[in-house]
Image (cartoon, rainbow, N blue to C red):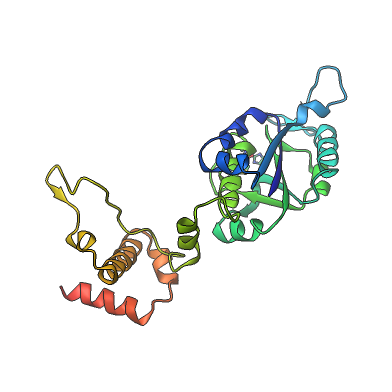
Length: 239
Ligand code: 21W
């Protein structure tokens, strides 16, 4: 997948040179590049913002550098233009699943109080990270691009991608343990050491359901519990 990010702070996206996304970039599964909107200014002071018409606090990002930057990037990227903004639809896993199917995407990060309204003519979609205030679009762009990229085939190992497709959707994770078997008097649950794969699967499923019910009742209500799920839960309630 080819991703171009338009921003006033291109260095912030060096974060993608590390870990799993960095590895996928080396393998050319992903091609993420960031571009400085300031390079597109036509004034000699390289100014990209100005006072808002009508007055008020803060500065507004001017439309000329932003639109020229979008036009230039579009020459080599025919993907959707996505603006990270607080007015956008709140991002979720379903949106990540849809966007990971795209071959190319363009992300536009706003700064200051906002962008000049006329810039929206060049934007296909606006996404927000959630109902809280960030310092700029970059801070939302990083987790959104990360969650899309990890769904691109080959970015995760086979085992991890399998997990993504299975029943794990909609429930929280079961507890994990690794060596040692005993730490500060706390032991690893017997069943995980038993080697009994069917019992391990059932235990993990039960824990996932119990944890989801306790910590995220909103998610639990939306689940379509299978016959086995109900059996696991009622058996646990008796014991
Ligand atoms: C934050 C810009 C606050 C402007 C009416 C008029 C991108 C973001 C952002 C930012 C304000 C996202 C106001 C979740 C976010 C982003 C920067 C101030 C006050 N209201 N998702 N003026 N949260 N934030 N606006 O902040 O650019 S996606």
